[in-house]
Image 1 (cartoon, helix red, strand yellow):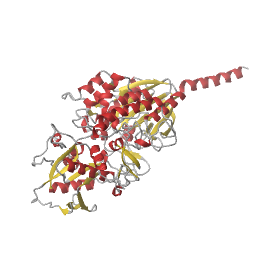
Image 2: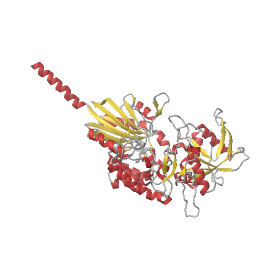
Image 3: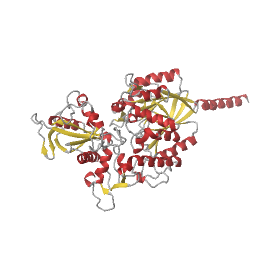
Image 4: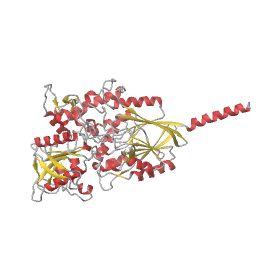
Length: 583
């Protein structure tokens, strides 16, 4: 009998120990959603309140349904986070400073913690502070964790954001508890994200490895958290050998007591979790096309096992009605403010196509026609409304979406080039103009040829000029000839003429940095029309209506709409068609 009770006691003790020490946590995560509230696909095709009738991926109404389903199954053990760049990418982001809509919506959906990405700074730190303040004044928002921000003691331009940090509306790290698990959360912006965030100034970002090491020691050894999660807007890329390489893998290798990295920035989709030593790294791709689900089993402050999968956010999921209604109401707000002045509205189609106009692909290294399409649109628009330019350029990194087959609306076009702002109330970087001499034109073409890696953000498309190039030649000798309007350019010193270049103000900032980027090999000095070096790029913004007071800015997305409206309507249905040359 004693033996029987001994074994029963032993079994009870083992079961009790498992209950105490085996704890489950489900992390639902997104990254790089870029304000895709209505999903990734043609606006008119998105039907979140019905199933099996559209090909659109993502959409916040569908995402909210998945959150609710998981929280019902694991009510005390579900953590919902985002790894940055949740803003910037659709017309919805344009009025955030006044409306503060998306962060409040994300809280209503169930997000617990978010970190900042480079695109949250597209309008500058003061505008970001206004977005957060407006959001908080109208409701609750997810807790923002930003661990490596450095504020300027000299400049006032980041004072609003610094104030939010001091009053802990933004925090350096968070400690929360789920299912009895004490969790530490860090949020960082990585080196590459920092490099492509020029509007973040005067805010700087401290080294992410140094930051995470310091906070990991604090949280693990002094705050005694059971689990440490880093929301990292740093990312990684496929290495071409079936694996991955990049900042987040280096971070995991350097910080030994980091349990999970929820990654973002590089729009990479991990079908399987990456492990570096004891660190789990995951990323969902982008645009909430997939929801990441990472289930951890934790025993004695260690991840004993885990299960990771990507859940497709597609039309097999019926959307959350409350979230969908809120988004539909907000459509009317942004449509009235940004499309009505152009005699457009959110849902009225303006063109159609029976083929896609594709972006360059990092995955298969193919070159699409979207870059050429955008460059041609910029040149058409500038030539129509201002002095004609010799050259229009656009970088692949500023082209955010493709044109998909079907009917095309104004918000579809806006999403192609949605980034940045100027000094007016119309969203988008202002189109600007600089001048360079003939020898510098050839140097610029040498830079473009050297940077032509399909899929890379730095891939430059141009309109108004053609070149003969031999990529097998030595550096700076690849471009053989340059042509304007079919006529060969004289690149000798005798040619004193200046040639005009139109592009977004964002892109033109980088032309003056070519010397630094090329380690001193190539120097190009941006000039004004009189040949004086440009020191303030804001003075090069093109005035698209000189009959009005002030500078009337032009935007790439508006250029695209006007260019599309210039095409032919061959079937006479009131919608122009994308020319087959862009197929």
